[in-house]
Image (cartoon, rainbow, N blue to C red; front, side, top):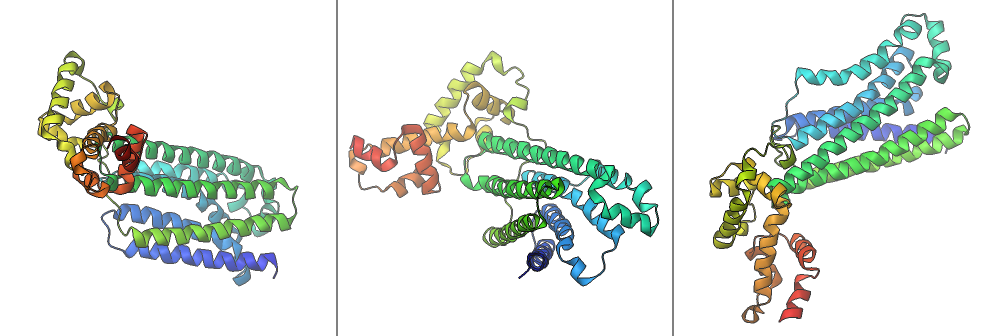
Length: 375
């Protein structure tokens, strides 16, 4: 079978899968409706862009619509960025200020008005046939690649900031599911970007045969189909998004320390005393807000105290107490029949993997190895 036919078939199937999954996202009930709308919009734009692989088999290509299709693909990066924000922040809303993300699309479209949109059919055909020879298209390509890097870099920044907020405010691993989802999504997106950019460079260089370009198109479409099936798998296994943070929440470094420096030693002493006497870390869903309420101190002060003064993330601070409690149980000769699974639940963990990871991080041994070394 000819490569162009394979590309057409794959392109049609891929676009159809994207549209079907987008319909699912737009109709399924969820607390994060905006996030689903943004992700569906991203997938729909991608599906429209991929019609180029098969549309010429069905209809005569309208040059104006095809150019608009190419320019519309420039909305994918802003939509990805806004989707990331919608997952991270529970109270994220689309505002007028977000219309600024349309500016690159408008720039890339408006520069074509003089030499394409306002000329006759013959001139449009000439422009289209010498596509890469037009300075407007060359500019759009470089501008688009710059935007891809910028938006993807911004998405990575916010996801890393999200991780820091989680470590500074939560101890339950279930609260990290959104982060893990975004991390996996961005990794797969990064691979897709690399394949797309490689295909574009090979196509635009003029140094490779059409057969090589077609092979890269097939690779891109096969990867795209894998990506969609991964999305469907995730949607079935994680039917709803988990709680994000309030937009106004800051990391400890972004907070104002205020007068904390004056008596932080006393506050650290009080904090450690409370942890030892009341053992709040036994609550597997403990958050820094919960602990601040128990201590009757502002959450901001407690966050700065733990994350900046003690140089520990709240996640690690709490796990240290849990691990010490577990070590005491594991080293107690009278509790040798208590299983590791029972111990991890008793000290505040809610999964064996997170307990083993934390225990080895703090002791250099697994719980079983530690027990054998001391009992």
